[in-house]
Image 1: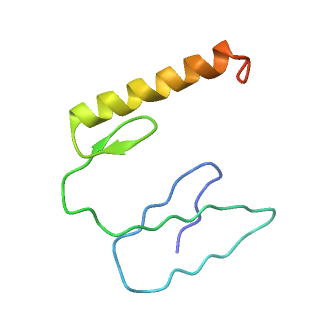
Image 2: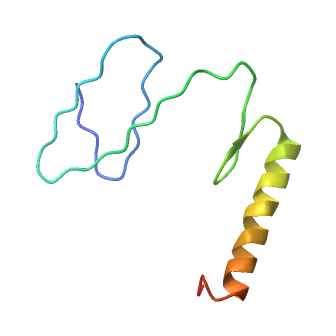
Length: 77
């Protein structure tokens, strides 16, 4: 077993086996799990989609929501 430095992501191979974590010091982690998608996926900065067009639409919607939140003062940046 190899240590994982702070801020890094660990990706495990698909398996039915358990995963053991050993924390050294003040440690936090997020664990995500999902069934393998039956189609190729297109990865964006903030999302994953099933096609390049769906990715473009999704990221455009994220930008639109951000603009709305900045315009109404919810986000300041």
